[in-house]
Length: 253
Image (cartoon, rainbow, N blue to C red; front, side, top):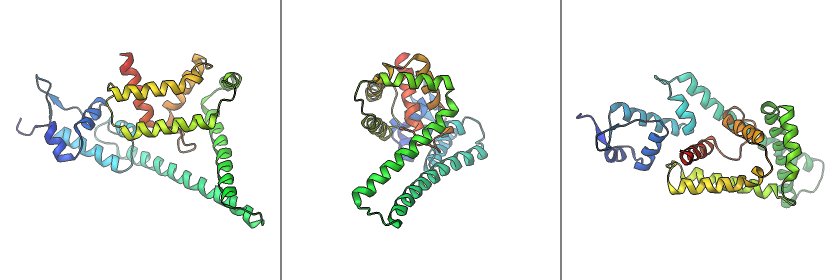
């Protein structure tokens, strides 16, 4: 028992907050011992696991990736390398996309077309939108059947007249950024529940027109985000998506 320390000492040694440690525990990343009064005690194995989590986060891995990588013992180095290569591939894809957009604008300049700052920004936005549309089509072609795609195409026109998709997408980005900045967060906390309510409010226009089959298909798509996020940037990270699922499960429970 001499090598066991309480949560306050872990906070002092690691620089983590007690809330972060509890969040890692809720995610199953670390499992401290409990006294009969519920006090958390951390031994060498738990401290080693926390050190692993911190090291992997510094390497750029998400908590969802860390959870999968550390599910087996000992740590599978090949899986770790594969995950990091996926992250690098995503970064390379973003760089390649930016390069393509810049070359597109440069070709206009080379042809003698006048390109001022406003035109430049417009070309970038339009090029980005076309590429994103094509990327999303490639992704959905893999995960939705022809019948499911036809169902989406037939139901989407039922959205309210004048529905501003661009503004709607900005709302998703803004909400996802706020959630990401707040993590780690206890799924049962008031703040987590408030984020979940915002999420559901944003979903409301689609829930009003989507069938249960469409919602199940969308959920499956985002559950498998790790498989396609290097091709098309999703509106929120896997950490945010996993967190929302956990909040929903906590509320249902």
